Length: 114
Length: 112
Image 1 (cartoon, each protein chain N blue to C red):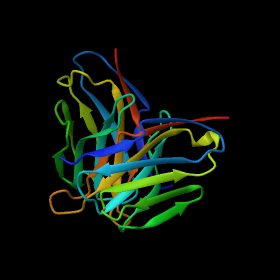
Image 2: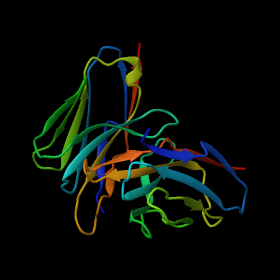
Image 3: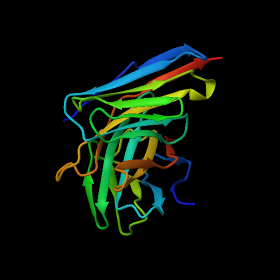
Image 4: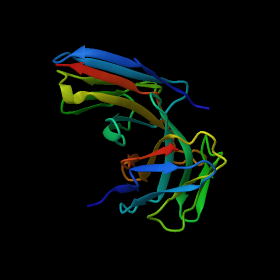
């Protein structure tokens, strides 16, 4: 089946630093999604990407849909303590058999030291 | 408010007992999903339903059962056949307009 490799697994940074994480796939996707999960809560959608090459921002967050459709990255600029959490990428391949199923990466645990 | 609700927040199961986790959405979404999350790991798909009265197994369906009698509701039963049920369970629904899944707040299941 499809697999997503998300890296890094964890990051420990100082407040104010920029952060970058990425996901790569063995298969192409039509949609890439980035979620953030805080402890004990469900994932919250941050950014959705729909076209190869698309670059989308949401405040201090920027994400890109790779040209090959097999990868995506998420950047966080000027990190703050409330950025702490687990960030997940997810890819979607629409089709008759796959429907609306998502394939998730393993997550990147972000820790921000004040 | 529109959204996805899961109840209860915490659930305790005794050995050999079936328990049912509730998931309700008022977003008018057709598709709904159940995921399991273990500590430090990603999300694994248990079951999903793309339309009322129809559902499909995900990657780890053994020991679980679901029903989809109403569009708004997609309950998950963790049966006694699931030998390692302790986990965080997440329900989601899918917006075909935005091509994205939205998640509920989760239910943490613990075995006594």
